[in-house]
Length: 109
Image (tube, rainbow, N blue to C red; front, side, top):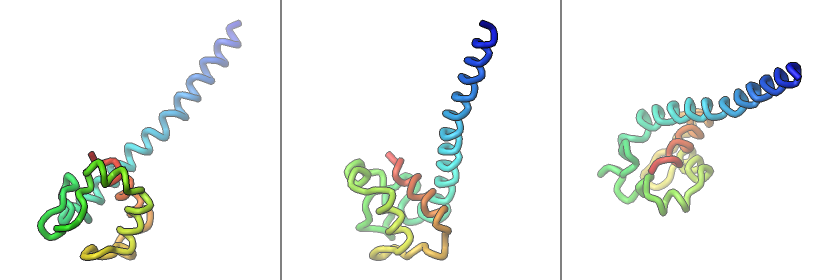
């Protein structure tokens, strides 16, 4: 019986670790995405996602309707290729950095 209990405890510990890893990775990615957003995007889009004067006409990135209608892939495309007054960030940020920023923007509220 002790052997079964040890196996169960080991299994529970292992499962707990496997569940915790994605949450830690997501938190780390969120921090990195936030830092990149602050450095590369906030000057026009505001720290809170509300467009500043130089980005007039841009959507507020924290608007619930915009969030609902816009996918991470949409954000990646616009960030990579540019749109309207927004310059493209292809070559200025890596694809992984752009994805981190897009993921961060997608969770703005």
